[in-house]
Figure 1 (tube, rainbow, N blue to C red):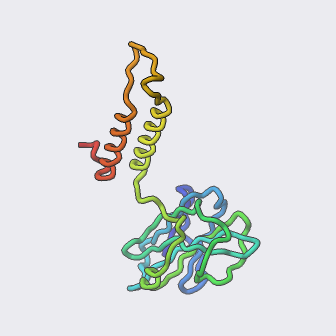
Figure 2: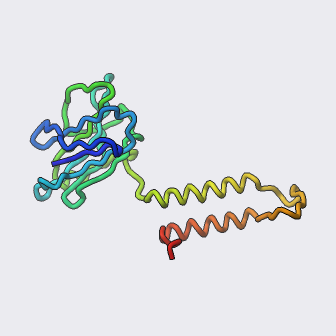
Figure 3: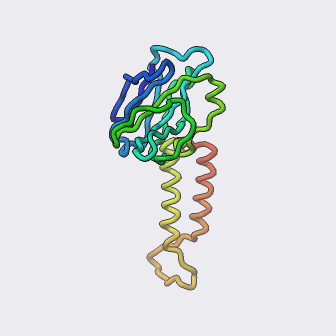
Length: 196
């Protein structure tokens, strides 16, 4: 019914069913994983009015397993990507998995709990599990703009500090800042404005 993709290197489609409505994937070497994708295989849909709450559990020898809600999947939203690198061991809350057998120190788990859509709507995922809604192109462009502005600003000097050099052009920092702000505004309005 479910699959789990780990950072583009491991695909699992053989979830361990631990109860009628609970499924577990083991994630070996989770310390080197930034994101996981949980998806429906398309073979069995959720029953009407049901979806799957997706949880992540660190192996924690001090306090047992600690589960953190990542988000959910449904028939209408059959896959989701979650950032797990920002989650912290020992932080967690109420979860439907009960006491699970201890895992090896380098193996974490992703769990899917089949629940009503009403229950899913009332749950709040761990804030650190959210993935940016900006695409990588927009993120890259924003970082590039910031880098250019920061780099050029590091050479800023007052007119009194400037030494006349006829072979070199100088651009006022205010011009770079104005360009940066205009580009950011246009990028927010339409990330693909540059294609026109």
